[in-house]
Image 1: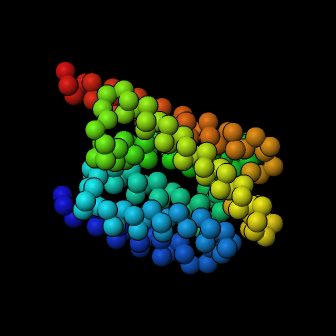
Image 2: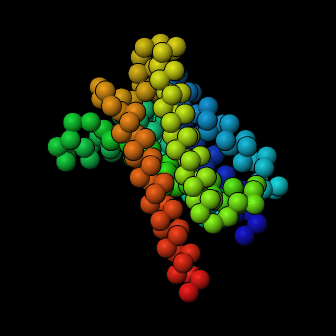
Image 3: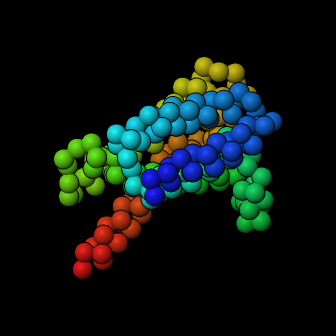
Length: 197
């Protein structure tokens, strides 16, 4: 369906406007939404020249919705995740780890899709390049979080960082991202192999 990305964008815009009302920390909400604005504009500007598959647009949409929920509450204070952690006897809210995991799980295939459109790379090299770029994005985001926490006000910076007192938070977040990447590529590889049989 040609208009499918437009429908998704309309639904996302509606959800975004609702979640923009009275977020927990307005400045943190703004910081979390900078990348939404940047990548949203890029997708709108390039969707005709480099059209991704509907599956890719769906995965981007799903990740973006989970992200803006985290931006509304801040990742470390998402209520349903806090309740779940409490029920399971866990000491921290794991929503931020969940987001890093689904970033790898949901955005890896759109990235592979984009690389197929932009380059002549194929086979195992495409898997390797997709993995390398996705890991780089995860690591760059961790550095961005750290840099932001260093230069903004302590309260907003710590909310954005979302470490919740964990000294190895960044490393664990990257591991979650990597796990999502590998699962996404494994599922893609298995389903593609089955469809070719």
